[in-house]
Image (cartoon, rainbow, N blue to C red; front, side, top):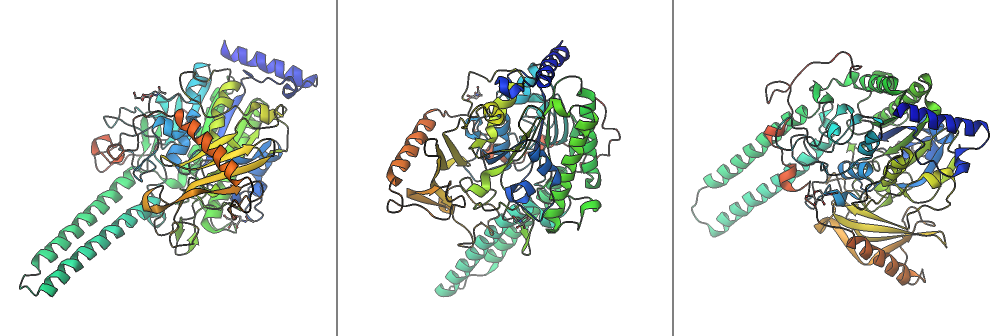
Length: 587
Ligand SMILES: *[C@@H]1O[C@H](CO)[C@@H](O)[C@H](O)[C@H]1NC(C)=O
Ligand SMILES: *[C@@H]1O[C@H](CO)[C@@H](O)[C@H](O)[C@H]1NC(C)=O
């Protein structure tokens, strides 16, 4: 029944196109039911792409997508780190509304074996489209939790969130599996260890100094014992950590672990095979496929074919490999004859990481002219990402849109196209992009967008439609380490609160329409409307806050501490190891 409906609506569209009545001219694509292919890169900078202005990195496939489709230049992620940004993407809501934000510094899920995750009562676009007869698949990274009470209840699993097929990493590339040197997890652990060592050293010095000055005849023994015990404790937790990190590098198909740990030489080809078999299986019905790349997150797993080929080191190689994968996926659509009936979207979950460095070599993305990067909720570089839509014959080719749009907009957009309804029992922050993409609306539906870092509101933007000016107000900004460095190199990720940020009162104001790099803060002297703009944005923030209600925090300490009984393991714990699976084409 549903595939038939699908072909009828397609027949209508096709006839329309043949008669020269482009659907965009009809103005209403609701329920057009195209296939939907969403492609998301991990930690990819907007400055790393040819069509966004890079002239030395080769991304011909992304560029081609933009030439044949619509390119958004002011596309903004709802958070500057993975877990909350992805939660917002899938639900169309600020991550604060689902509890997917932290107040304690742990801003993403740190392990697979933790009970935090996307709450089961949140509704993803996959769930709505599945209910409307779509085949729904997720291939690649998830990073939104797995278990609640046992190692296999899979309460947060993609299959419990509206996807009927899953192949990929339930966790992320964060726990390194290959180059331990380039691991984000290692960087974080070592930072904490360093702090611990400093505290210990300080304690030992104070004790010693105390003893010496008082010239008591006390012995050194307690100091030595204390230091040794603390040293052993931290070393043990470090190595146990390494063991678990390794166990987090695994692949699953649906509810089954297929490889633990993963064999990275084959991961890229396994993912591509899986995509092509999903499209083959489902080409006769509408499908929604979310391909969530493991690229270009550190440790930058790159096959031999692409190693050493780019002008930008391992990061450039990895980027060019991802672009090639994207090309392979577009070729699959061509081969299966579904290119014209498929809406394709490409984005990144947030900006490139400036702190991903090793011995002064950059291993993270480049955010072009934008200030800051991954982890900075307010500065543009952390949240401004690529956004490209292609739907041949329906969306105009080569259009560039400079209106503010959000990754959260994908939710109502695909729900509308798939003929579903957005939930009415909760606030949805995304706005359908259909009118803007088709060209029936000139302006985005967003007047204000709010930029959070964890649960803290760092900044807000106001698109003043009449004047076309784009204001951005910063209430807090991260303190860089070392000072003035433009990033938090020795903390590995900029903090959101406490002494890691500077509070601005009065707030910093920028006019992004004239100063996209946020280089020149305005003052009442330089901008006569300073007070009026700050007051108007302040009013919008107040109104926005009235729509928030408290929900269970998913990244609270209890929810992000590793629990052995939640660790998925396909061997004998803690030696989790199991073989490769052969054929990815079942189910
Ligand atoms: C292109 O991307 C590379 C790699 O991130 C970066 O080093 C370079 O500065 C970028 N070039 C331009 C013109 O943005
Ligand atoms: C989900 O459940 C939590 C806890 O009961 C509740 O606070 C929240 O409002 C619910 N969310 C939705 C979207 O219904």
